[in-house]
Amino acid sequence: MTMTINKKRIRNLDRYISYIADGTQIIVGISDLDRFTSILTRIGFIQPYQSGQTILPPGTFGPISLYNAEGKYIVHKNQPMKPSYRSSRYGYV
Image (cartoon, rainbow, N blue to C red; front, side, top):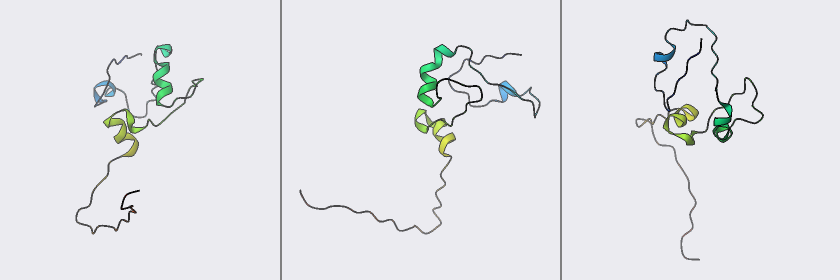
């Protein structure tokens, strides 16, 4: 069975994979490799492309990529602040 998804951003995969049973192996692929070669290289895939090659995209492609790459930071406002030291230079050169 083949499924084609033509969207730029998918927020919820349930619409597309809800009928697939747990534990079933699926393969995600690109049908027109020549069309996406520049994008694949830019996001970190290494040529020649090999089956099974995986990457973790950098967070510079958008808010969702940033969240997937770095996770979520939780600020604990009820905890004491840690000291932070910074050096600076005053005056004119």
